[in-house]
Image (spheres, rainbow, N blue to C red):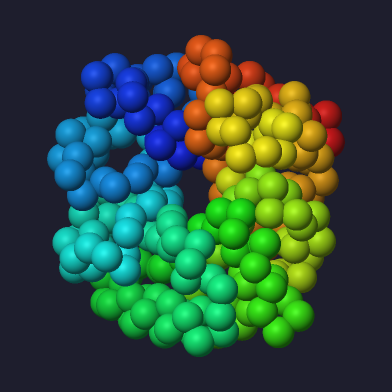
Length: 246
């Protein structure tokens, strides 16, 4: 598998030097990235990706709070084929009624995305796993309300922080999961304590194997105490080494 990098990981370097940061990502060995809030930087980002031979199969954008046409148009220009809503607050995951309302809105966004040839998905945090609705996690309840063309990008670290086994969750969600976020650490909400893949408590390789319909594995750090470029390089080296030995 060719792994992708969620560019939120490098949000500070990108603010200081977008072209140089993208060049370093390519030099580390990534061939794919996952941009976030890409509308504002679409032109500069597109040029940097092209210059460095990188593609962006997926991207994050707040579909339920910003102009969807603008998002999908920018995604199309960048070659992004799956746009993922990355964040719906915890208070919207506590009742079946609220979850149904969110699913309906995302289903509508997917219809608009289809007009641009773009697929829509959703990315979780821990609260979608902490909340139980009718005896199931809110994420699983939500997944059953989505139209068939919608996909999930499961953040496997936040699944574990939310008290669930990511291997079990991936198995239950099945083919709906086309992307995952790969991160590691002590399984706490302290984002600065996150670690390169293979260094923490997540059974990263078991998690990847459990995603049977996986298209893209996306490396991400929400934050990091050390040198972030070294951190992503260590993650990619671990994943590539594991793939070579499999």
